[in-house]
Amino acid sequence: MTQRVYLDWNATTPLLPEARAALVAALDICGNPSSVHGEGRRARRILQDARSAVAAAVAADPKTLTFTSGATESNALALTPGLHRAATPPARRLVVSAVEHSSVRAGGRFPRDAVALAPVDRSGLIDLARLEQLLADAPPALVSVMLANNETGAIQPIREVAALVRANRGILHVDAVAAFGKINIDFKDLGCDLLSVSAHKIGGPKGVGALVVAEDLRGLEPALTGGGQEKGRRAGTENLAGIAGFGAAAHVAIASLERHAAHCAALRLRLERGLKQIVGSTIIFAETVPRLPNTTLFTAPGLHAETAVIAFDLEGIAVSSGSACSSGKVQPSHVLTAMGTGEALASGGIRISLGWETTENDIDRALEAWRKLAGTLVKKNDETVLERF
Ligand code: PMP
Image (cartoon, rainbow, N blue to C red):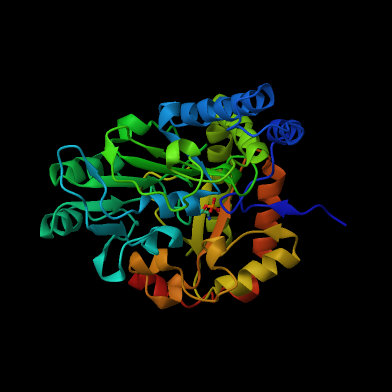
């Protein structure tokens, strides 16, 4: 049997050997990081080393980083009504971009009627003028805008968003999950107040994440209460092994970021050229705006993403239709819908996302499969839906 080709790195990544080694070693540490004795202190050292490594990967102060069970929890924790800085009133409204991950669009602990969606343009970038209006409507608001989109890879102008939010005395949360390990992230330089990341997108284990919280932020109520772990922000004995694996993966992510980005960018060029050669009318979403170097979301006339994903899978190629969290439920991508593609195109986006193990041969195998499948899956003479977008 020929080897399978995994091209769904935005859904999750393989565990790095360094992360596995750190994780396995930490499993043998008996101490509880909260205990004062030697065993406890040993566990605590592992926890703090990992905290330093993950914080360094986003240029944040380790003191400001809270470990969680993943970015879903980080996002839920961040979206707390009442957040404010010392000199600003509490934010009672939440504004999220229309292309956020479902864990942000869920609105955290805000009542439904206190949540507003900020629209995006045809490339998926936030409409800054509309955001400004929404912010001015009833200030101050908590705003959540992702650094890069997990489906299209489009990179948001976060610094500009941060300036608008500050001018309106609001608070900014950034979901940096998709961007983590792919582009440089500097918490302070972005100008945000809260930032979420997840281990399993950078070669760490699944089920571990972190939330960075600016030192001057007030009013972050824990979602889980009990013991005083994580400075009272997140009760519960820490997932030491998972966190150790996260720390090791973060070390690798910093050291290999540039090489990894260049590797993916070259392969993606090969991929996108090939896709266009095979079907001339291919659309690559967010093609003309800054994008993550590893992500391609494309479609072609008549393409149904769910059918295509299964067909690719039968050819041994793992790709996805938009975000993995919404697969299984056959519904159009909310990201493409927000970009104004119309329903037909919003159901036709195939995401190919690359990583450090991806090879030229993998890209060629995917293109070979696509050449074979496109004959039946693409309506060669139906350009109408494409023209409308
Ligand atoms: N935000 C984004 C942009 C994501 O892609 C994901 C993972 N699909 C999450 C948040 C949730 O992360 P986790 O799987 O760690 O809960």
